[in-house]
Image (cartoon, rainbow, N blue to C red):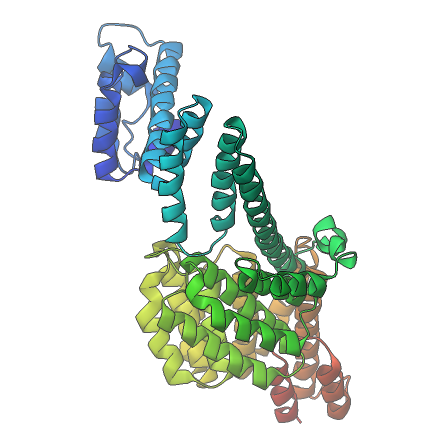
Amino acid sequence: MVSIKIAEVLKSFTKEEIHDFEKFMKSSYFSNGRNYFPLFNIVKKFHPDFNNPDFNKQYIYKKLYPSKKYNDQVVRNLFSGLMKICEKYLVYKSITGNKLEYHGILAEEYKNRMLYKESEKNISNSIKLIKGSGIDKEYFKNYYEMLQIKREIAQSTNDTKQTIENLSRESLNFFYYTLLEVSRHIEEMAVFNHNLNTNFEDHITFRIFEYLDLDKIRCFLAENKYDYFEIAELFIIHIKLLLDYGNEQLFEKFRNVLAKNMNKLSRWGRYNMYLCLENTCVRLEAVNETKYRQILFKIYMEQLDLNIYNSEENGKMAADMFRNIVINALKLEEYTWAEHFIEKYIDTLHPDYRDNMYNFCFALLNFEKGNFELSLNDISKVKFDTFVFKFDVRILTLMIYYELDYLEAAISMIDSFKHFIIETPSISDYIREIHLNFIKYLHEIIKLHTKNKSYETGILLKEIEKSRVRNKKWLLKTAVKSR
């Protein structure tokens, strides 16, 4: 078996799409007059996995040309042609499957052909679809594009009044679209700054707000009663909050404005606004951990109740969100709730993550309950590739080793974990600091436990208390017990 590019594409096709693609190929317009059916009839037999050893170029060539000597270039040309038809099908399916895009393309095409009535009809159809969708990342962009076509038609027909009116509305929607996109990008940059070795604070997207008075913009929109000024206010507060994560008053204001405007947002909009609430709560734990863990718990429950734990209907829950929900519940000692959540929502994860996440979460749950042997058994089954979970598994394993008095194993793992942290350049300074501090203080606690202490317990407790460190409460509790 060899890797053939089109196989990767066809793997993503459902049985219905394979059948639909076959009908699509029957049009000579799309196949440029060449018959690719013999090739496709062979290839489709290997769908959906394409992992049969017979799926290789030599086998396929022999099926197509039994009496001819193998010619690699002929096979390459055939697959290249089939791939082009496949790409045309994907574009066709995307356009015909998206009514808004379909009407938008028609509106533009009719306008270019000076068929203005037909263009206006498709603009009206597009605007109806936009209004019925709720506000999301495409809402104002789509509105702006339709109003732009309307303005161009008005200009072409010398309708000055409509040109001015559409220009005004077009510009407003472009402004709102910019606000939404800026807030979305700052959110992503802030998350990268927190977790990875990035420095977006000096990026123009951040720095430009040193020269803009967002409160004046918000007041101007409200005073002049612009359409959607409540949504613009939400975006503006969102941006301010992203630039000042530790501001508790802004956080409460954001929650209140979001609650008032939830019904105007699409599923995507609601999901992303809740992500901002989650991320802000995590930052505010530095101000009052108990308070903001409880608020975060409520936010997670609201998301689950509203079925907005992902951005798409029937979409999968992100693995890191699942992890965060469980960890937060356990920190609040909501053990029964956490177990119920794991069992109820594990199938909302992508199948590739389910077993690992299930074992990881039960390892956490059993640890918190004091079932350390069970926890060790669960964590031994976990194999995660993402760096966040690599840290999680190592941290939990070290805590289990300590609780089970496997101190030599813990010391050995501390050494290897330290090298892993230092030699992972992609993580942020913050992530590096809290993990290096964890293994530093755990090592000192082990020394206390074995009476080979370099710290007095009181001094160690003060050091841990004032440091930025992961699993601080467990370290403090463990240090006290080691006396």
